[in-house]
Amino acid sequence: MTHDVIAWFRDPDHWRGAGGVPTLLGQHALLTLVSMVLATAVGLPLALWLGHRRRGGTFAVNLTNVGRAIPIVALLSVLSLGLFGTAELGPFGRSGLATLVTLALFALPPIVTNTYTGMTEVDADVVEAARGMGMGELELLRRVELPLAMPLIVSGIRLAVVQVWATATIAALVAGPGLGRIIVHGYESFQTAEVVAGSLIVAVVALFLELTLALVQKLMDPLPAGSR
Amino acid sequence: MLASVAPASSDNCLTRNDWICGKYYSSRAGDLTDALVQHVGIVVVSVLLGLAVAVPLALLARRYRKLEGVIVGTTTALYTIPSLALFSLLVPVTGLGVTTVVIGLGLYSLTILVRNILEGLRAVPADVRESALGMGYAARRMLWRVEVPLALPAIMAGLRVATVSTVALTTVGAILDYGGLGDLLVDGTRTNFKAQVLATSVLCVLLAVVLDLLLVGLQRLLTPWTRTEAAR
Image (cartoon, rainbow over all chains, first blue to last red; front, side, top):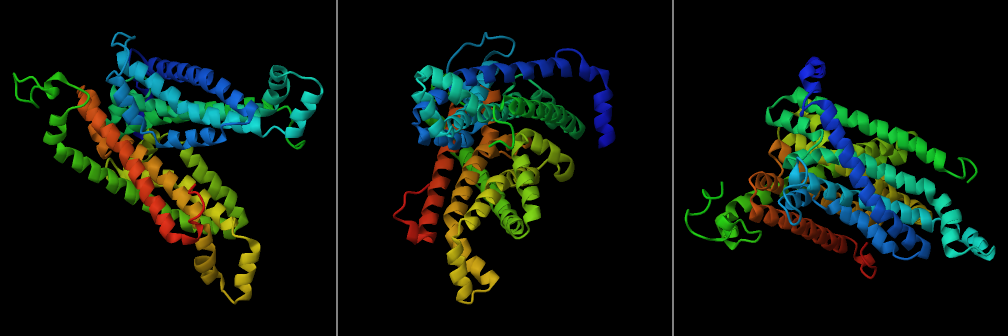
């Protein structure tokens, strides 16, 4: 088994061309990046606003549960058969767009929930003190709440990035782009070594992303460990 | 592709490839039922498997503090492995079949189940435990007669989340041709068969809702004393 996997990695054919690892890795990274940007652009301001007003907690929590319940394959399938959009969107047409939208929706719950929790966990006394110092709402958000909530916000983004990266493999089930193609091809041709090789690449990068973002999270903490 | 499904020449919702198509439901009711039955079977077996493993793990974690970090950490780490990759990594061990799907999904449900069982047991008030001890309850009897019943709301909450997310995740089993409704979903997407994709998606969501409601009902039956509280 191990031998077959190593042989797969050493085959130069797996490293070039449209189906090669670098191309697929690029597609996978682009998918993850774009869907994260979309999800953050929508989810972050929403959660910051809700958290600042300290309202909508039930919404934030329920969003996570709904997120878990969404059959991602179903969403991907319905979207890729085109509830909207056209087939002329890049080389992967609707499957590419469907994957983007699905992944962005998938990334929303952890971003919203963590940001909201981070904002509401900012000490009410601190907020009151800042108000007493004459800070306006926007200044309060920017200079007090946001920095204090930052570790949890980054942790939500980190969770979302890793999940999106990993889930992007499912795109290949509906003929979408990314590293999932290697895994799906392996399954379809009953080549276990190829399935394992593809999964390994996804897992190693996921681990790298996880560790890098954990570091970022640590650096973003205005109150280093021990002072809380 | 679709012409073979419907009588040629006739103009109906199958040949037009509509999203909603009564002819599809009637002509493929058998396929849909089979897929639904397989889906339910996979979900039930996986969650029961998860529960059977989660209970002893949670008890171990509670009994031995040192093990707690390891058990909670490992089950949490499992959840971060992508479903497709988890199935792939199990393939060399369990083969290209339904076993891989069931074990993979069972492993996923562990995260939530272990956590909720532990939390539930922890939340049993210390004085309740003390009174039971004073009444002469031995450890095992106390666990099953006092602690587990009191922890039931938390355990059932975990079971609900685990079940609902397993319904969704089962579709990924389509990669191994054991995805229940997921098989029809993927097949429908590949052949551009809209009626099939929409029908199976809706069934999938409905199944999650129905199983969730059943578990809420079960919880009410098992914990009559909480009936006045809102279900969480």
